[in-house]
Image 1: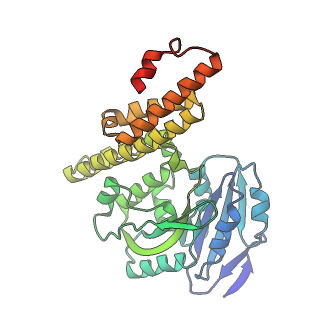
Image 2: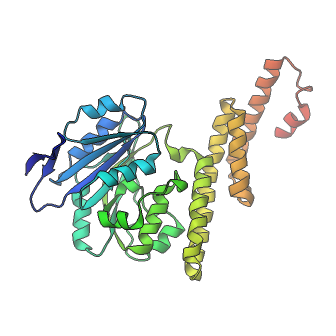
Image 3: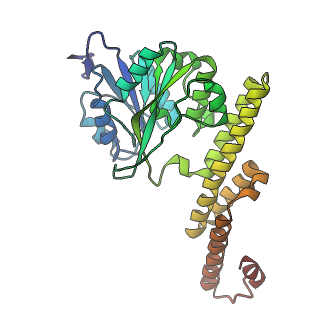
Length: 342
């Protein structure tokens, strides 16, 4: 293995005979996590990689964090969203294979090597999928995904539910991403799921059970924003309908997936609404409620009973705070409503 400069000052890890793998790291105001992500990329056992960090208009210390690693390629742009940042990384990449990892996540040391071994066993595959672990804000492991290792019906199963733990668990052949046109920001923040569906429609995939990445759970994860995710997954489902119209089996799978996303992110949105109520954010709670009514609709009747008690308690607490703030009696602020909530 040797190192060489590409003319811009970056040193690229090089091993003749080993395929070049590009690892794209989009970053928006996650400079505190970025060094951990970069170091996990540079620690790969595969000897031929390039690491490309895309600063998507960050206003924190992302510049300083990236500057500590002269071997990476660093590109700054105006804020355009994570999908466009990934596309920018793809455009600047030179590898035969492309891996995406968010700035708050990490790769395991053997991630790229495990993926390439899977490609060797399944040369027909356009992309390969591994498993992930979950870590907390401090980087401690809190569990493993244990996602299924599928052997057939990839597209159908992807319609039914996203069986891919996360895009960070996927290694793509570069030409696949170029052929399907990269990420589409219209579907943000579910553009990664939509891209996987497009890829699975046109290319086969292969799965293996090795843990290849660590997904960091923290308060600002997009997956905790139920109202936004309900809208995004609904857009994905609607866009997919023309591609399943010819098959009753695929239509059934898409209906099942639609139900899954409405139930899953409906539950997330309910918790989000409680957080807004506890924080006194009435506008946020109203926005979340509107999303539930629009996208979950009749399935609200399957809300677990425990959510009702949490919701009514939060509403009672807000009424008490309102009475105290306005110095009003319980009767004047709606004693009848308060009684019903009990």
